[in-house]
Image 1: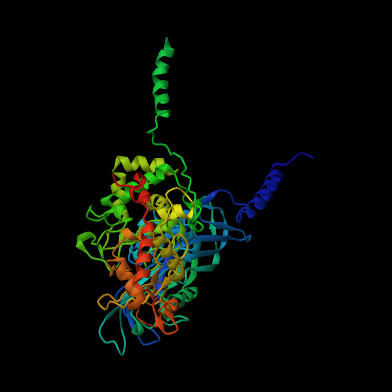
Image 2: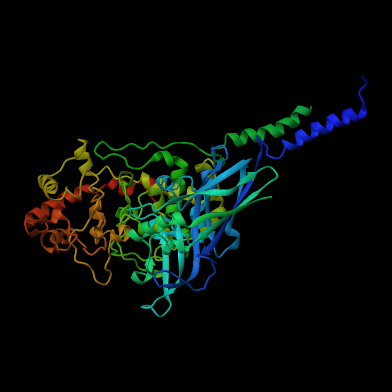
Length: 259
Length: 346
């Protein structure tokens, strides 16, 4: 039988359909791309804004004037369970509510894959402290410029959360400062692992953006409560361990854009 | 004919390769060996290997006033070699803007054998220690980014950083490592006492000094232990609290009630040169120090148990015992370290 033209078209059409169906989710994406982490600070159910009154369950009303924290040691988990760790020396960032650009991290050279989880640390980890200055690059200088260096102990402020508060007992605006970091007794470093509600698809031509909500109210009005009336300068001791434990409930991924 | 022109290119390259002053990284290690009579090394050299150029860069930084905000206060301004790197005669030192501190300048010696630094142990890594006086507003008031900009504009620093570190970067990491290399090298281990301990020539102690040493081991060495003369612990030695300062000591770092008014046990090496004494420099003479221990110790919740025995406060000492102890303590003076040109400013 002679090959009829329309038969050839039919076969080719069917063949194209099959190839088109299998193209959507590459089983083995190759190359590298970028991934963005956006840190969106909120206070309970409102977007965090400076000089706006928020009331805690302990009856203290606060207004925030500074909210900064160190994000570090970012690890991304792929759909197949394996992980990609951002090189340590490139994995220290200062998120500053007062500097919009700092709240969006663009991580380059991420292997193309479908990512299901992101994990990061708040602060500088014990391993880095034990190395001394080794591997820090210029981060100390950067931290000093951002007011995130603890000069008196040659360390870092992991979190700097400052403002004023009032309460039934404290009727005039009184400054509060919460600084966490390594003390003589605790490292106060916390690791957070977040599931992504939808996969982040890193490709050579797709840069996903992971929108992370950070409810800073959890730091002082979470599982553990910090009463500024008991001491408005919280910069050491056992209270820092309480705040560090609260970090577990601060962060959540709201959504992921893949475009 | 054409090959002659090629030599014009090759010869300059050969010249550069053999030039000792080249800007390439120079991996010339410095061996660090512990003297036989010292406790084990505590510093981890793996993270910051000693090299000749690293040490040279660290020394240059140590004596450079431009690290301070007003260009005048270098580390060496308060840490003066001939006073065992303390600030002779000064209870407290004055930093930028004539600001006065609240603690006495400690010596720089044998830091490789110590595990915490500063009177309150605020940091436990030597390479990070420099951050404290460098950035303190009342000491050097330094800003890392300004210092880095200054060094990037200085040809000598540019060359030294390239020679001292494989990545040649002028950044806070390399700057601190260089300072760490300088500080860790400053060793005092050749006093007459050391020579006596190692049975070397020049190691003879007089009868009085030997009696002082025996007394020392009996009454002082439980805290001022080993040939480094400190056990690296924090203790309250019964000094009455100065109410105008109320220095809480180690408590600031740990916020543990048991650490209130505790300070690091200092090394007594070169004690003849490091007056005045104690964390706040309140005693001008060794006699005053021993008088404190024999009759000046005050009780408090955190007073060290070793200073309260059977209701007796302090360490009972007769005048004769004090004389002998002081004679012994003077044998810890190490003129080799005090004048070692490797550590000198000029």
